[in-house]
Image (cartoon, rainbow, N blue to C red; front, top):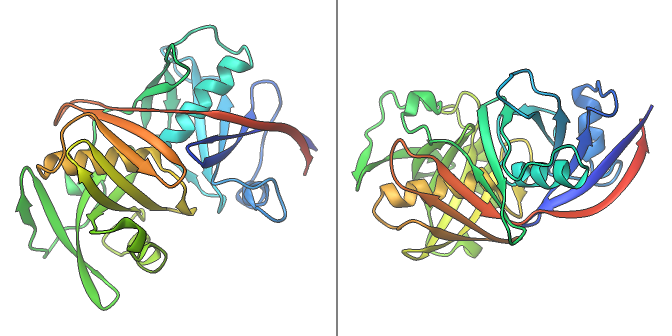
Length: 283
């Protein structure tokens, strides 16, 4: 079968976007992984699938597959690419849409300057719902947050646990460029305290309105930017008393902005989305 696709990125976090409304798409995990492979396929961090909604109050359904072929709940940078895609393809004339995801409904909005803001929903902060197993751990209060000791390799790191529809473990580091992302990232991602694995965030606080961030993502490894990771890091930083909303997030692939007004409020992610090329691949 031949499959039409669009290659896009949001601050360097790159995607294969597939219109499953105009064409029939029924692939297995190995086929998703092959599409995302950078040597034997198209290459991407994630694959985004555009479908008709299953809910009357939504405009689209949005499915996300990591480059290991596994389906995941949420992707903030992908949500911006999703909006740009459905707008450019004429699938909607709206500037603000409601999109059904595995993690719930999100509401992306196309801004006048071409950037895209996504209402990512309120973060989940209760450890058991992230999910994170805190049994037997002695958490340390910092501001309005709790830092949890996590055994990683021969040492221990203190992390904030946050879900933005997907689980995140955020730690503060002195210099993000020197942080052991490649070594510690996989150990945190697969830590037994996280039954659904976790995205590992490494955050350097530059000022009260600016952070640098690297994220080792579940099933994808380190990416050039992570939208849900940016939201989780800002939420953690604000709760710890280190940051004030809105916060500029400098990722290796570009700049994002996150606004959050506190517990119970949604996090808003703003940033670019870029179309790279279109093509057709035979599977």
